[in-house]
Image (tube, rainbow, N blue to C red; front, side, top):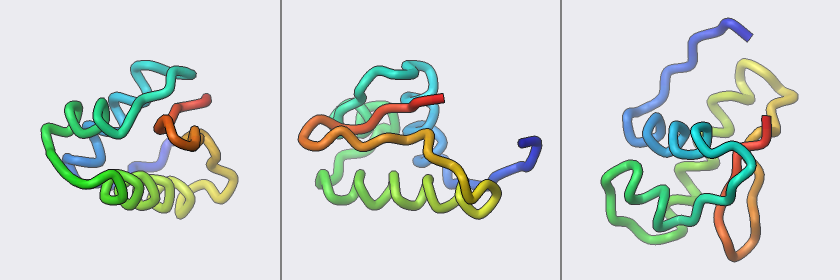
Length: 77
């Protein structure tokens, strides 16, 4: 939408991992590896929520990050 969104570097790397593999499920482990962090799964969930919130502030209709229960997340353009 042409609006800059400021997110921390950790979130950027996780978002990049989702975006370069659109439609493919990325596991918590894959997102940790992409961001070069080792955390609990619920921390990854919190990071994804924060990323979604950042996009939703600019576009209330943002729904591009889908949760796949028990598997991870995927980017759906």
